[in-house]
Length: 497
Image: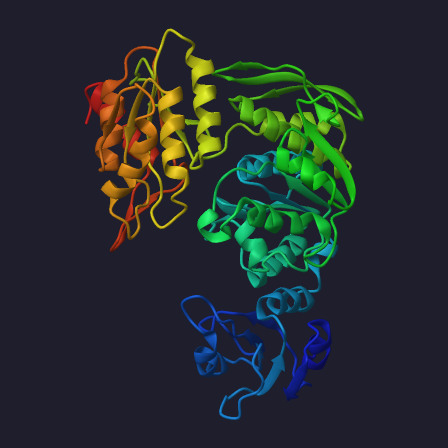
């Protein structure tokens, strides 16, 4: 694409230099450019990328996109001035890669909890219908059968458009992705026409960034109203969520709701839950269908209903949707059971879950209570992240104490904060219950203590990190995987180390 044409697509307010040059790629990272790349200079919280323009040009950048006017001393062959550099990055990437989202059925999923599991379920439905798919989310990015570890829940705009183009070239007809509120605020999801936008729920989280729940909701809402550059063809909304009710009034496209409420379009009135999964009858506008799933927990009923509603909105039949849901056996770090091999067994269960908000923790612990019944105990290990929303810490402590028989509060990515200070804030909520609790700042020691405490029939919940395999400390990041540590503790418990 000629720079002159690109300037029109991103609505540049000024354009200077060699506008006949061909733009082959776009990036905001001066280190990765190649000849023919357009460099977008973004002022961030920590760095001003304008200082890296010489490096980008040395790498082969043919133009700079910036909110600043052309500076005489800046060595760039061409300069495109825009009103919003982040939005221009998304627009430029979509244009240079040929607007791949217009040629794919793209589903974007947003909400506080359930994004990852719902994305996996929708992906499984797509695969049952079309044999291949692309999926971009918190755990991994996958195109066909090729996977890569995800750095962000939602890729940067240029990376996202590039991967969508790769998905199209690989023969994918559909793609599903998680879209975080941060990604929406930072324009990563701009210029992304969606076949379906899905809203799971909204609960307390990220208030360190958004400040208020209304601001948090307003970010999510943009995905459904066309504010990011195009309204979705279908909006799939949780009818039972109070913010879902607000969203129904402003969302664009064909609206389809899901939940337990009798007015929801896709719903169920009852479900059977066990340690081996879920079974229920779903009522939809296309008819009724029996659903079976290996996923455990009431909250997964919502995720399944959301995926079913999305599958129908994408044009797939009930039989295919049910088959896809049944094929989705597990999602890493989402109520994931830690097992030993057949030769080594313990007489209690250990579950690792990503729950790191009060609502998510409540859902997980309620499920744990349903699984173990009244005869056995729920032992919970959890902490709260450092340099993140502090308001949820005492609330999570209260939730853990109210639904657990024993709580061990520990560290969870303390970052620059003192782990003991974080634990002290959680303890405010723990003290509201008479349930016993222990404070063990070392996460490994906390997991070992929980597993040594467990008795026959008990259920140990290790919450907060899920699929993550690291612990972020003040001065370094170390390898740490709750599943590995739990398995090590279990092996030691049965006499092997």
